[in-house]
Amino acid sequence: MLLIVCRHKFINLPSNFTLFNVQITFQIHKMSKEITSREADYSQWYNDIVLKADLAEHSAVRGCMVIKPNGYAIWEKMQAILDKMFKDTGHQNAYFPLFIPKSFFSKEASHVEGFATECAVVTHYRLKNDGNGNIVVDETAKLEEELIVRPTSETIIWNTYKGWIQSYRDLPILINQWANVVRWEMRTRLFLRTAEFLWQEGHTAHATAEEAIEETERMLHIYADFAENWLAVPVIRGRKSPNERFAGALDTYCIEALMQDGKALQAGTSHFLGQNFAKAFDVKFTGKDGKLDHVWATSWGVSTRLMGALIMAHSDDSGLVIPPKLAPVQVVVVPIYKSDEDLSKISAYVNELSLRLRGMGISVKYDDRDTQRPGFKFADYEMKGVPVRIAIGGRDLENKTVEIARRDTKVKQTVPQEGLDIYIAKLLEDIQQSMFNKALAYRDEHITEADSYEEFKELLDTKAGFISAHWDGTPETEQKIKEETKATIRCIPLNNKLEDGICIYSGKASTQRVLFARAY
RNA sequence: CGGGAUGUAGCGUAGCCCGGUAUCGCGCCACAUUUGGGAUGUGGAGGUCGUAGGUUCGAAUCCUGCCAUCCCGACCA
Image 1: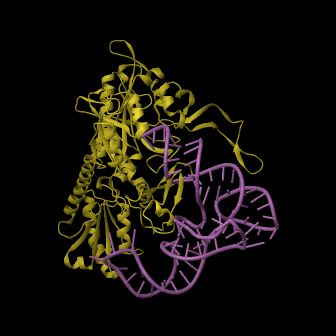
Image 2: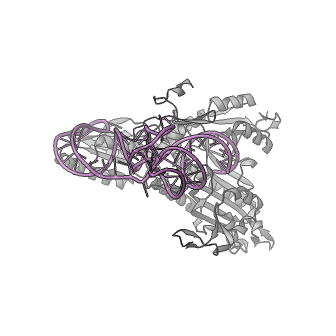
């Protein structure tokens, strides 16, 4: 801490931190292209990646971001893949209103409790000029009933479903919506927590509890499949403890991922809502047996937060690393030339190669701009996470080779032009797999068992990651642990092995371990 | 929302304590030489100092409100 007196000097500390509740700011001069290292300041590193890889930026609106083309292209890929998965399992897309009448919210008690403190409310529908050149709200244009900007759509959807469902023949209803939602968060972070975010929300209606539970689990597995096989992010499938459950759900399933700083990130949730919303909105159906019953419901969603998971799981101190299956550009080709003649020879080859690669479904970008030098392009594509970079110059033309650099390991190799298309296709698969394996190995190394509260607290301070420990199953214990350590129960893993033990906090009997972690 | 801090050119900043319209680097534009890891030289453009008031002959500088951002806490996908 003596270092603090050395203001103006280069000190390897975050440029902003708080000591004894006093913020101390160091002037650390950074080249514009450099990013903070993960070791120096993980949060700052994350911000740098998002901004410098040109994924998103802060907007003029508090807590809301602008998703830039580079970032949106990745989100579009996520959407396309998930959308296909949903449709392959029988779901259809639909769209419900952005605004929800306030009265709808009070119909499901625990739901309103969960969202009430973070709602944007529309109270008026007109502006006027006040005569001094200012635009003001026209107080005479007050809405009779306020409208809530949706924080989630259960209420408006179940209000609608009431009109759609009379008989078991109308079931199941399997609908998904791609939308934006607003939750008035106090502290926001690009992609991880913004006041407005993009997501999909599935809302299904079923005749039986069994069927609804089956649906809840099916979607959880789809999310896990997506995270692992496309994002290359290993996840733990599990169920939330009652404390962490969705407002209005009987059971919440989730996938939990581990970030490189050892904090957990909830990457997707799937809820079994029981008959709560059907009862709140009076949605009944006549069964085969002629008996009237409330409909069973599920809802499930993933959001642009997945962008945060993708970034934090794989990227390094040189910038973004995107798994090939999510990369908008999978291969970038950079020509290196001294004369126009060289360039035209290189271009002839590259155009032919690009055609073959595109024929194999590989997206290629040929960057023949003469306004930037090769070294600049190398650094730039590294920052933006393009999985494979090909450099080709006069030397390569002579030797019939190219230079290939893979982003994940940063290994460079000279490869013959012959069979290059096959080589690249295999390389992309290899990168995808090796990114997953790396993340999986990290994750598995960071699940540690704790058998006492002392050990548990020690682990939280010394080794990041999940802690597997016995818990007595009560919300009180979970709450106490959360208050004392900031760690929460991330999930109770599915297919958890049963094992007798005692709760690390209360010493009461327990039948299984659950996963704790500090989380985003 | 509670505590702390910060807003000066596209980005990062100096100047603020001790009032006299602004410093430097990167980036940008032009030309030339360059091009296998973030080029070099020469010339040039760009700022109502977050915003609205107040004090003053005069405000980036002093005072007040507001807005935004960052850090710590509470809340949360």
